[in-house]
Image (cartoon, rainbow over all chains, first blue to last red; front, side, top):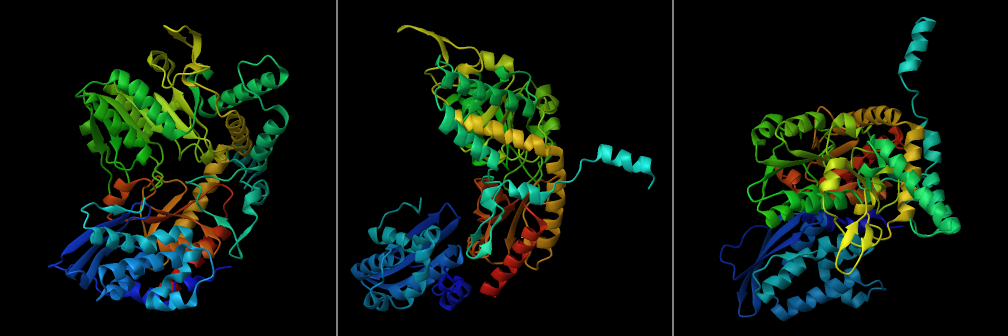
Length: 151
Length: 420
């Protein structure tokens, strides 16, 4: 039986209540919009780049606690990373919350605070909430203009 | 109270439902979810099935599965008879004039698409107008948008007020000589509003328009009489009426159905086929191409039988009291705001809860054994009207209890604890 506290860890509740890096970056180099039509989560992502390094990142929009906390934690984690490092982080994060196998402790460790979202793994319908910001990041990195949708 | 008065009362007021006896007929209800007794409050999405429906499906597949209308063997004759008996039950359930007016479709969605593509496409021209409302389910919006693209017809929208009721004065202003079709929900799936459908129909008919009523949310909760409603088409889905998924009923007035071209071509809808020309079957077969969902139809017949045995008036009465109780319990919780507070409502409680996103409410309630729906309920324009991305929706059936409403209220307190 899943414990609700595994999903709504204090870190999640805190980042939902006071999301970090929330608001528009007026001088963003890249922006992208993400939308989850199933639950109506919407977010805009703003990236400021120095060559291929993320110097600043922010988001705004509305969504459930999981999607807001995930975006908040993601933006914290991305600052100072190169685009390749960001993509690699997405890949590890995605593995963590979708792969149904024992977690490699070292990998989880490397994810730092993002590991607070590990509980989402037990809620297949909520995985999309946690990954919406990352898919939006991917779109922003690719520099595509289109809105990304989870459906 | 004198004896005579008491007798009179029992003669006019139906005996209340014995909810425990009803619940005993629904095997799925007796289970635990996350270690808590299941409170299934997602009936507007799909309803649970009584034993009799499950047994009827089982019996069909075990004893007389075969194709209908064409076999000369015993199993086929038995299946055909059961299929057509269900049609008669469906006809009587909505008081259609004849079995020719009672067409089996996959569900309400397919029925609306059928009407749009068969009636609409053959009758409408550029500049004609179709009226729907702001509270419609996407299945009563998108087929009309498609038809407008195909024909050049225009879509007009009846607005709703902040209680979630149609603004009838605005509807009257939209009606005119160009109005050809009016298609509205009998009961709103997102708000629970019971619409004044007879009045809507009368006003539309005065302009010569045909009226389509989406009865997906109404058929399980209130008596439907298509003659009394005077509508031209009526649709409902089996799975919301305690029957199988993938089956529904389209009522259509015979004159209209006769004039309409078939929707799908294939077997069973023909009298004679040559490689040059086909002569179509008479009603209702004209609209039932291919091998239909035979088990579904027979299962739907069993579901209608169950509802009839319980009594739709008793169901309505019970659910009204349960909804009143739920409205009182849930709206007493600080931070709860009901979305949809129409004077005439049925079985649906849509709400938001402070800053807690409905999705999170859904997950936390699930942990308390409570199944509700969260999201836009396939009615995004309604969400837009109320400026919310989503709502949480509890929807009731006659097997739900006050204890389950209490469980919901306690679950909502749990949401507050988590998000403090």
